[in-house]
Image (tube, helix red, strand yellow):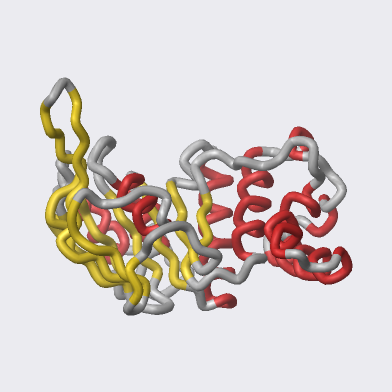
Length: 242
């Protein structure tokens, strides 16, 4: 579904070229849950933004199917690190915003928005405003807002990094359940090895900048995963030494 061919990203600073990413080649399969991990500054977010069409490679090509990505698309939903909710809109109107922009009538867009609020467990909060929600609840709203537009690909940029461990684990379980129900392709950026092993079908590891793919792991564990098993702990150990 998504193909990255010889991707390099660089920028000019003090009249010198600095590379953020170098020679990235990657195929993301339809319906796959792919995690991209690596140290801070290795270009993970830059790579995700280029897949979203929010940024562009210095050289190389990024394809969706056989079409080169040239800008944002409703086929690719994006969940940011920060919640990016409209504080003046209640939860229901935040989730329905994209459908409103598309021109759907109020009854239809609210019906769809309520479906996804139910999916993320927030039906009873549809009239609440963002300031009244916890961090975990805000991120659920952000996920529902992306899903309601029915994208083929869901791009997630460290969406749980600001949450406490208990909330993060709960949302990871919810995300796996939603992914299985919706059968979306998910590309998830994280620097958390435990999170990657828990979520992914496959983990791509980037080096220190300029980011290069140095290892790929196929995760052949059942979902939902038990973090205490020897297999889980062994995979975490292997990822940490990359």
